Image 1 (cartoon, rainbow, N blue to C red):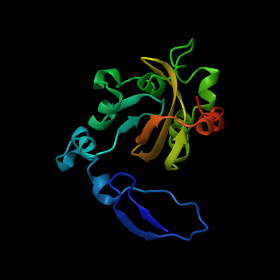
Image 2: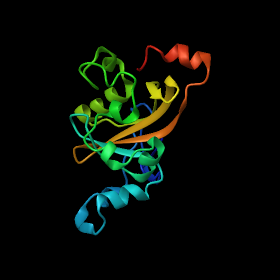
Image 3: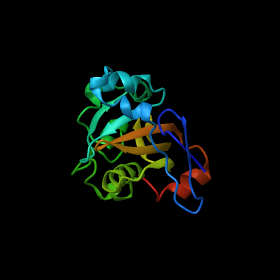
Amino acid sequence: MIRVCAWCKKDLGIEHDTKKIITHGICDSCAANFIQDLGMPLYIFLDKLKVPIFLVDKDGLMLTANKDARTLLGKDINEIKGMRGGEVIECAYAHLEGGCGRTHHCKSCTIRNLVMATHETGNSFHRVLAYPDINTGDGVRKMRFEISTELVAGVVFLRIDDMRPATTKVENTETAANSR
């Protein structure tokens, strides 16, 4: 299999034994842009990426988000920075007693679990499905997310590859136990 940059999709040209677990990596160009002394601040680099990206610290707090992420959620940076993921995406359980990351619902949260696993192990995840219950103007709705994670310099880059309402009965039924 060929390994590609999880951020710009560039072919890294590294072939792997297909019996091993394959994860996406980051190309030298994308990695170099994270170093501010190269003349490009991180927020400018993130805004150049045409996919929604959030940076999450080891405690699960959002450090920043690019323009596409802010647009997707209809939030400005002040509504994201320093917040927990469930608060940012409007998880139906984020505002219960204890808060995001501290309720019994959070134990099965696919998004939170992947971000924390990436922090703990350094393993990347690519296009994993998650089905959180989200507060909307019309009540709570199950949403279908595809997410990818990558650990870079102690920060998890959380990419939203796709986000839409969970539309099929099978999709809603089969995934109810997977994520909240």
